[in-house]
Image (cartoon, rainbow over the protein chains, first blue to last red):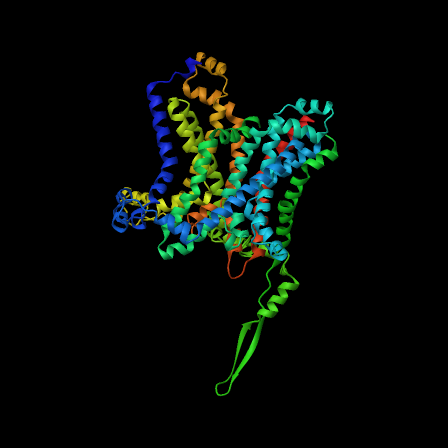
Length: 292
Length: 343
């Protein structure tokens, strides 16, 4: 192995440089936007020189200090971004919990069945997984208006749960395949019913897979734009559609910095997610791939 | 597992998928056969004591509402919407095919039709972004195997960000940076010493911006998967290839790449599916003037404030669904074959 891993110096240098370039490309936009969100508009979108964004030339002139929280105040307090944040918390948490509950039951059944119809359900789920969300949304609009359930949070939650099911089923199905069958079967030999075996034997060992799947369910709910933008009324908007609705109105008022602050606020939870769950995210991404 | 137990376990999931994925697809199929009612117009005569009488045509909103209440789907139109100007544009295409001045002319005129415009960008995005992002991801994975351990943690951390960032937010961040007063916009102007340079105004530049954004968000996924794959390359094979005198490149070409092949197929499949629905970047980068996608066209129809065009949106949706199924066909056939070989 040591023989294979030995690299000439130049190659190492080139690789390191390449990695550093990629690191800058990946990280710089975020760092720049976070930095700029504490400036005033004429600094962050400087007509003169981008040095103003770094030194905060106009920020100092207008507010007396090189950093200002005006953007955040405007977004969170004046334009009621906090309301969208609460809605997002409700939507993403509900979507994650319900998706996982349905998905673990279904995924377990698919992994243990081995019959022909289980295979067909998985194939149908694969096709459903590929459907662009907005095509489904155009099917919801009229029926939802007719039933008078358009615009409410629970409607969007259920829709997102359903859209998320194919992925959850696939992910948990392959996770349950990696848990030995003997485990629950021996419990059944000892007199448990299938459901008891699931509850007493499988549930205690399934958490790593569930947490990984849960992260991706969370991301789907959190990152969604198509469903929440079309199916929620103005009062019930979550963060992402709220930010998009800023764009039209805010450019006129010269309040771009509100949108920048809102964008940074919405990015922070994702930052945290990667920071704490990096290993689970990586294992989740590779799980499906390495096996299949 | 007995049928009954299986059903008990999977029923909630199935109900959710049938109600909110299968039924909406049927709903879309039905809607695509209808068009919105025309507004009911009435002619009213206004007579004034001195000015005489004038007649004007106004929308009879009461009658229009009544019509909507009786038949909410609208008027039956059959496949009419599919073939009209905004979708497959059969007449226009026939005309272009029968009367044109060469290949470039056909392309240019097809591109002027809204559906083909959206389709061409969607396909271009799919088939340019996917391979380039995979290549970049592969190169990052190869390079990171060579750098000191110290760099690995931060690289994986920051690489995950472009991937999990909300697409709309990610594209907005880029949009602000490349805007005429943003740091990249100013930088590019300076680099090409062209003070009027604007990435938004020209068609090729808009496409390139969107594609670069796509590569930026797609590459991390390939990187993570390929990096995991690289850790499982058999050391013995590598060493024997080395003893046989294979150069560094030959080892990559004949040992590493075949080993990663199944992973590459998986990554390509997932990314093609995701890229086919490209939508948020167009909203975030305000690129609709120069680039629209199928998903964006549907969104636009639904968003239309004056008259929500459900029929038109549904038709584009159906065409998109057909596109997805064509894209998935090879995979479905392969899975089916493999399954039959096994059983």
